[in-house]
Structures are given as structure tokens and as C-alpha cells.
Length: 93
Length: 222
Image (cartoon, rainbow over all chains, first blue to last red; front, side):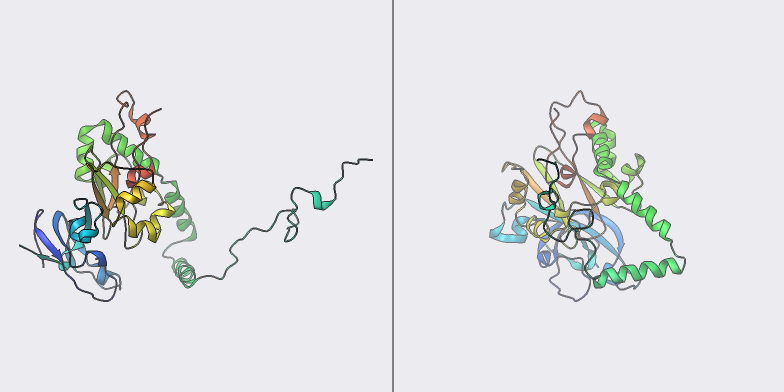
């Protein structure tokens, strides 16, 4: 499980699991930077089915529009922040 | 000889057919069958009431409490932030605590305030569903929940903002915030110029709902 601080470079895992997922498709596989840590939060992928949700670190990750959309970006250095759970992130170098 | 009497076809309320006895056409009402989820909601609500978990009165009072919330609450928070630098800092640090400090009953809302400046413009969306800080701002506008707004604003925020009548210079960085999990967001718009003499209550009248979503700037003073 990822346990990192603000400024850490990360990548959203490109997984395609079924079920109730709070990681938007358009961010899967994309690289960003931790904007801030939001503490621990119950895993919605379990809570959605009435299961006890494991406590996971929740992060706000900042992506540039170029990171997400490549050459299609309207303005490459505009940004998008999203909340992503730790098990969806891997640290990049 | 004129009698003043008009035959029915000349009456202003004549709509040819489908008239109720009042002379007005029937309006569409809850005429369609319930959807699956409407049926599910009613069944669940009735069970909860039947088992004593809640009551119809409690549900009605919760609906009243939600309807009583409005963008005016958020506007007061923004106006305080414009007027009181220490409050602004607390709001940026923990927007839930700062809102409660002003006496707003926001429940379990986990709120993040993001501040517009001369160089940065923030805009809020929930691409997965329609998350909105309704415990502070009341119910969201219909467009906020549309697939069009939700899908386009993350790809072409500048075009979307232009359609809202807000064209930002290329020197302004746009930060889109997608509420994908537990947090909700409120934008602190830029305080309009020429407002130095206004008090907090007057400032609050300049803060519109859309300016706290990020699809507009705060209103200029008259």
C-alpha cells in the first residue's frame, strides 16, 4: 500500500476491476503528483456492497491536462485534481 | 344588439379539448408508472418507518432542513474569508471546521476550499456522479448533474467556461477539481475590485452559486 507525502510522483494503476470503483477511467494509467494527503478513508469498493471497508490512505492527486489528454489538451499546463485511494497508486521515479 | 356574452370558443381559456372543469388544460402530473428505483425507495422508506428506524415526520423535517440550505450560506463563508485574513487561512486549512465555526450545520461534510487568484481559476465537477457540497450550498443546479457538463469540463474547461460567459486569459491557469471520493469543494472567487468599502453582508450579495462552483466570477458591485 502506498504511504507517501505531498509532492510524490505517482501513477494511477491501469486496472479494470468490476464493481463500484471511484477511480475514473480517464485517469487510469495516468501520471500525477500527490497534492495533499487526506488521511484514512473506508474503501468504497467494499462499503458499496455492505462489507466492512478497509481503511485506506486517500490522496488528492494533481495531473496536468497534458498528462491526461496528451496533444489533445486544451492548454497543457492547466491541471486536474482528483481523490484517489492508495491501492490505486504506485510510486514513480 | 351586443350583450357582452361570448360563446365558449371565443373564451381566452379555450384550448379546444382536454379541458378540466375550470377551463384550463390538464397539466402533466405523476402519470407515468414508477421506475424500478422509485419503487425501491418507497419500499425501503416504508420499511424503515414500519420498523421504527425513522418516521415520516423525521423524513419531512430532513427535507425541510435540506431545502432551507442555499448558496447564501456559502456566500457568507466567502464574504467572511474576503474580510478576515485569519478566517481565510482557517478556511483554506479546514473548510469544514471554518464553516461550523460560523454556525452552519453541515453534518459530516468534508469540505475543501480552493481559492481563485489573479493567476489561478478553480472549477468543480463530479465526473462519477454529482457530488456537491449541498450541506453548505443547498441542492445543485440541474446542469451540474448533466453528462455533458461532467464529461466536457475535464477535457475542455475553457470552452465550457466560455459557454457560461467567462473567457479567461491564457495567462490564467485553470485547476479542475473532480470530487471522486469523500471530499466536497467550494471555490473562493476573487474579491471584485471597488468593494473595499463594503461590509461582510454587502459582500455576500456579490457571491453567486456559480461563482462558488467556478463557472462564474463574483458579481461586480453596482
